[in-house]
Image 1: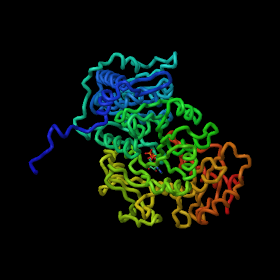
Image 2: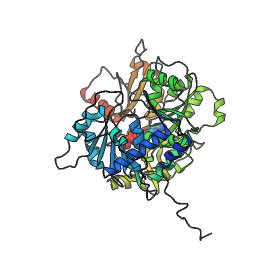
Image 3: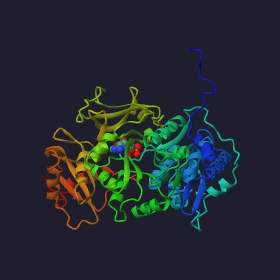
Image 4: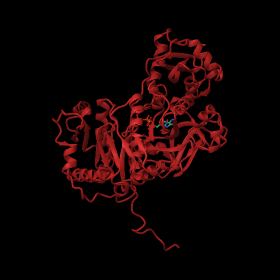
Length: 552
Ligand SMILES: Nc1ncnc2c1ncn2[C@@H]1O[C@H](COP(=O)(O)OP(=O)(O)OP(=O)(O)O)[C@@H](O)[C@H]1O
């Protein structure tokens, strides 16, 4: 058998772009993208992406060039996920909620040549570009006008999105990757703990990721997916490409709140949606809710979902799945794979089990929790803390222009996540913190996630985040920042909150300070910015403010 080698017939590069042509053949007349009054079919999407790819190519963009997009979940954003790499270029989606300075830094760092701009982001982009040093090359701008908006600003834009689509060649021979390892996307991390890092993924990685993510969530053919997760965030956890593989309908929304989500679910018969736990919390606390007529599958990831939030979402008729991943893994690589026997457990126990991050998806090679110094696996006792490490075919190629950071997190054959977790006796892992968020109080590691999950179960608490506050005696103590539910009539006292925690947590984990806030600072992907809260906790000490804190 040694003579049998790979040949051209069996080794064509894997790429998720191949899903599109098949979708046009199989699901050609079925809806692909729906946005307000616009509906495209899969044959429309296929044709439009080819036309756009040919225009991008005609502008001189190709292999190795970065093409950026600043847009919310509108049809153009979906199409660019195919069209940019079909021109051979690398797609770089930028978070629309970043400030001009950060956008400017990312555009320069990525060396972006062409920038597609949603009309609402025009002021942001123009300001970002004005911050470029005079000698820095600027990207060419393409305006994405909204079909529903009559007046769109056209100055500064040599091209429009619709113009590029219309003038493109529907028979374009799209640029296939030469190798599986050719880059397909450059995604910047959320910037929750530090400045965003540029993650590069290849065609092969995103191919595996897209199919694995469909399998892990048991997505059937032709789902109706409501885009509540920004596509700019890790390519919508790769479901942008995945929807083409199963011929799904992509319901696009420019912006949403709970009532828009419930209304859209009813209007379009939504079957699937994704969202960070903050979205689940918003839905389950909304007065617009009520029980869903048909179950809606919701996949949550991006931050630890408190068991009480999972419980409330499921009681409305959402079927919740829980995944864990990083920008560096493209999508989620660990899921709380559900065992049928758990359905016989009481709802609160089911929610507690579902809040665990779980086991590797089928395409990941290995996942472990290891001791930082020795690299040895921690005991499977649900108590011993270690760093979560991953190994598999769709870990990023590395950080763009940052070999040092790449080597730091990819070593000894593992990708080090920077997340701290435990391994339970049944082989399911659970995140206890991000290494930067661990609170060390009196020499004990204190999991902020555990304290938060207790706070979330308090009937008046809407959101909670726990961070370290410097303490002369303990080194650090837990400081809780809490928002209250809108319907809360009587604001609980700090003492009541602490008593509530004391009944459910070891003494050393009970927050020594509780601060009520109208809102918690978040990234655009719904992650609570703990570094901002840590600064606030530090400032509490410095200013000697006593009105919002107390000690036990
Ligand atoms: N299911 C989950 N439960 C707990 N935490 C999660 C889950 N899914 C993702 N996370 C957290 O999100 C992180 C990955 O987030 P992302 O890649 O968006 O950027 P970031 O890490 O928030 O930003 P930065 O690296 O710039 O600080 C993980 O490392 C983990 O801490």
